[in-house]
Image (cartoon, rainbow, N blue to C red; front, side):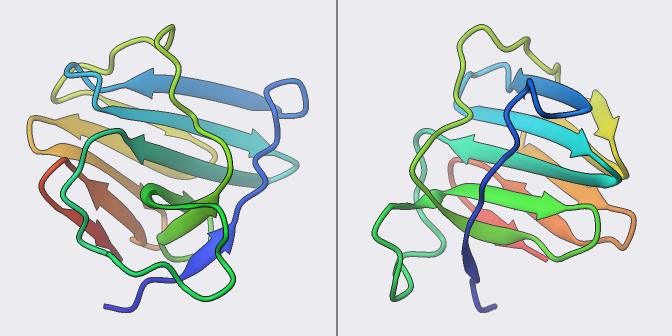
Length: 133
């Protein structure tokens, strides 16, 4: 599967209609979900990982390989970013629980986090393996 890198500019909480931040029970994956004016996005950053996607695309001069995102209409992407959604104040999303916002759902499991939109696109991330779909 070919990874697509994009520079994501996430609306800050003050500009977002809604914002949810959460992390896995291990604290290794931190996520943020935003919605605004009919749009929505989920992004998860994996702190420690064995990267599935290793080579950064041309033009990515920022951090690459640890940040995954999906919006409410497109496919999951590996993001080229210069920031993080990691925040130790984020609440834990227990295993087996899910959060939904703006047509995107994220589910926490012992195997990692999976976020999908209504079209079935998204990503699954864990320390050992990451997948875009």
